[in-house]
Length: 153
Image: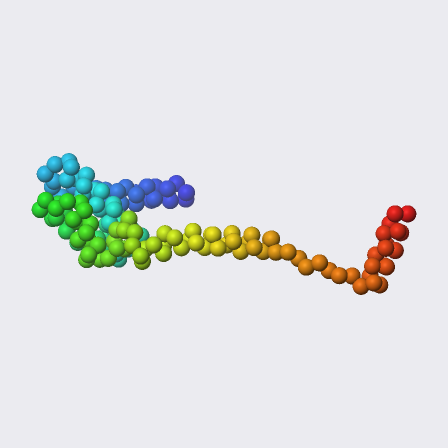
């Protein structure tokens, strides 16, 4: 039972990796630099449909279109930055795994730090709060003195 499950998993992994390699091999590059740039781009650009999957690993038609467009732009002589700018202009900052630092994205960068600082401040404030001294009535003081005397004996 376990052996057949492991064999099935291995077969699926082989098929997935061969499908990915087949897709990349269908493109013809002028040189190794173009191939390396293409590979870097397809791993750096996110599929807008698949959410957390890059276009190299996605089988969605949109990811296929993005791979084709990246390939065409590389063949036209466009730089990596130009291709990224084109994709961001078309699909938004979400498509790039390394979005630029802007006012909108600064909330994502500074928000967690701000929450931690506020939490530490609240914790420190609560632990340093002075407790008001409790005033004892004359009867309570007398009872306290009696208890102390009986404890010493």
